[in-house]
Amino acid sequence: MSKAVCPGSFDPVTLGHLDIIGRAARLFDEVVVALGVNPSKSRWFSPEERIAMMERACAPFPNVVVRGFTGLVTEFCAEQRAVALVKGLRSSSDFDYELPMAHMNVALTGIETVFLPASTGQSFVSSSLVKEVVSFGGDVAAFVPDFVLEALLERAAQRR
View 1 (tube, rainbow, N blue to C red):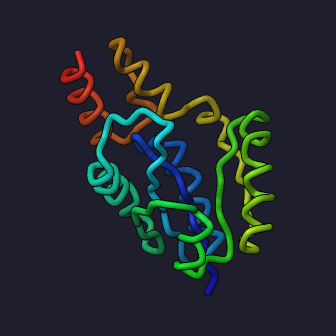
View 2: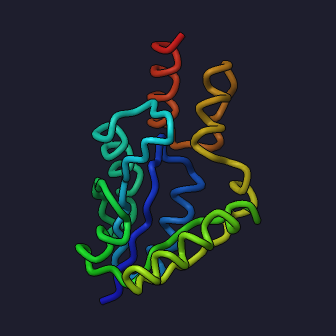
């Protein structure tokens, strides 16, 4: 059985994330969506809120599970007995950022990284950009699931 880990902060989950996760779910027997804690990123949602949103968003994929993790993703992959990491790439700058990490990960533990290009309609979408647009009153309904949009609007109102 092949298992892959799809890591990220997912603050919040976007349709671009779900596109990558869904495509990974077709390539591997099991996909573990790993919600990590990255102190360099500003968070709108707690780990528990992000996990709950991701579980709801991934419900259509029967071979996808959602887990939280701290520490190195390579250690999490070893614990999960995953054979690969799956990373989505929106642009060449994503590749430039991800490639050295992929090399380090394989050097540390032998875990391979599978890069999936973002779908054309999602290639510019990021969680950070979605939060920024919402904070200025913009409409991001085309880029996130409906229930995530509701949570974003509520959180944006609290932050004003």
